[in-house]
Image (tube, rainbow, N blue to C red):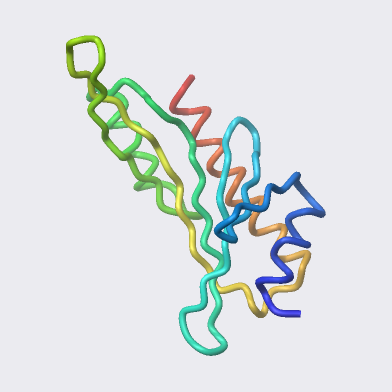
Length: 135
């Protein structure tokens, strides 16, 4: 069974999974949600691409930016990033931001148990970052 067939089965054994029209798999974990998909880079090189939304529409100030920067520096399982946005609608512009965790890893040689453990470790890392940001 190839990775694109294994990933849904592995995820469904540990979390509720929503199958998206574009082939992505969406899971919710501890007040976050994540999109996972298999990406073929080259023959015999498939990656699992995980993007986890940790927080959205955070009011941006120097304190939030500093917290995100610290987590971006300290997080080992994934890359934490801040996507800044300008919200309008009340006649005034307001800067907000979404915080994401991204992690791409080759998974072809991992057993199903190792794959599920690694995914849960990454999702737990994202949930920890979320709690630190919104506390």
